[in-house]
Length: 198
Image (cartoon, rainbow, N blue to C red; front, side, top):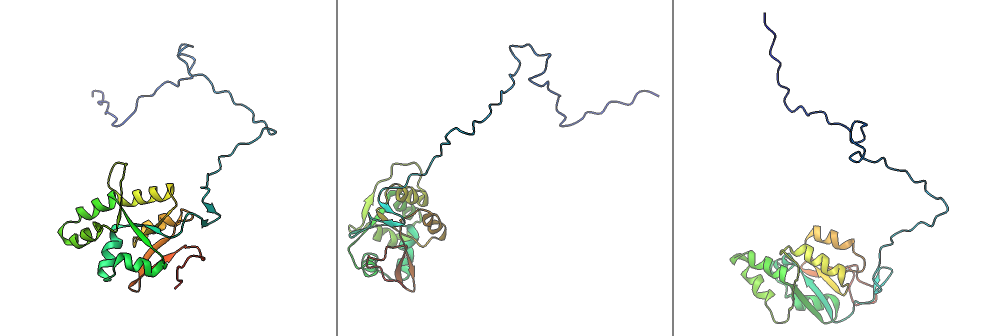
């Protein structure tokens, strides 16, 4: 009887020499790491997150009439469903002049929705709405709004999107406007402004 054929081992890796092995030339060999002992008396440095000067704890001093309100795509759609005039309802909610702001990303999102949402597009192109240009790449409105609010804390964000609300709640000093019971409500607004609590 002959020898049985040696079977190939599939997915078997060749054994590699350790880089610290003595058989490797000294100049090619990996150097052993020298462990430094930590000095217990040394001063520890910590990076503390910078908070903007406009915040007094959670109170945002930059907010005040006229309010600049960043509007999200679904906020316009839900306002149309609830038959609410956006600018008038904002003024009824805050008892002050409101300037709705629309970023390029939100406008692009509404345009992508097509003919079904042409009423929303017509409302977004209203001359009372302020247009904010975007400099970043892509047209994802949620990231755009969060980035803008993080940089400048002078805005109120109007949205119905749960995920966006959750993201904005993590940023201190930014109020959120939403729709409930066929009217606009606001959360996280300082008490001394005319925001009714329901």
